[in-house]
Image (cartoon, one colour):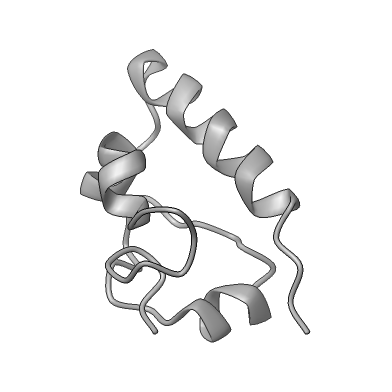
Length: 68
């Protein structure tokens, strides 16, 4: 299951958080791989202010994920 593309939460994350998705280096990583990296997202460039709000929401979303 891919972190950004598949529906492992309520909706694919690329739809919920399009700005961070566009500049993310890990666009095809799996959910398992991202969890192993402790949800550490890598970006192609520094984040501009317009990305910060979406990134904060994504961070909160990921903090609430429980993996069995």
